[in-house]
Image (cartoon, rainbow, N blue to C red; front, side, top):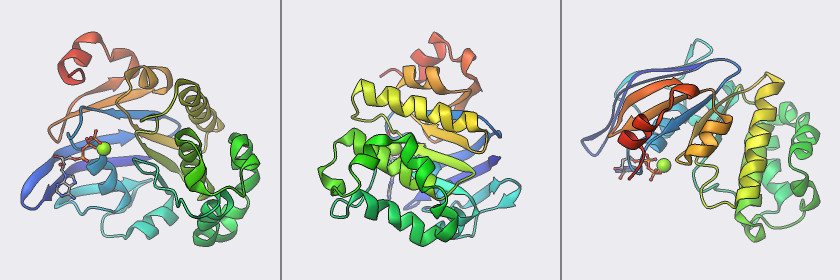
Length: 231
Ligand SMILES: Nc1ncnc2c1ncn2[C@@H]1O[C@H](COP(=O)(O)OP(=O)(O)OP(=O)(O)O)[C@@H](O)[C@H]1O
Ligand SMILES: [Mg+2]
């Protein structure tokens, strides 16, 4: 569904990503893991179009995305939930969702009921300002907004960061439900190991801008965790 081939990215002349290769197969949930500052968010930004790789290729269902601006990539089927959630605090829940409807038109309109069913709390709070929601509710809003664009792939950057356990479980269940529906593949950046073990099909681990391990989630053993994930 999504493939990154030999992606290199530099900021101000210093190399951040070094030849990143990563594949998200159809119908699967892939976890990209790694310690702070190794380049996970930068990898997602290269996919979404917020940084420009010097080399490599990013393909969605065979179509090259490099060179396209972020909005064009979104229309091709990339749904993005950024780190820190990034919802509009002064707009209501409904207005936050409506932004997707405006950008993606009737395509998104058809998704409203389905998405609100996934997140009943949002349905209840449609008229509340985004900024007064709890962190977990804002995360649900950010995911709902991305789903409204009817993506082929949903990309999430640390959705469990700073969120209480019962909402983490709810987010995990929702991701599994979405995956099971069979239309959306998922790429998840995550540092919370147990979450990856419970929802992931496969993993990639990044260290200093390069992929250093990958495989089916069942192969994510203690040695790999100790070497690349624990601080
Ligand atoms: N706009 C920028 N300009 C310069 N350097 C940057 C910029 N954005 C990120 N970096 C640097 O690139 C490296 C990778 O950052 P990135 O945000 O991709 O890491 P990360 O793995 O997502 O970390 P975290 O787990 O803390 O979110 C870091 O050393 C960071 O300081
Ligand atoms: Mg990050």
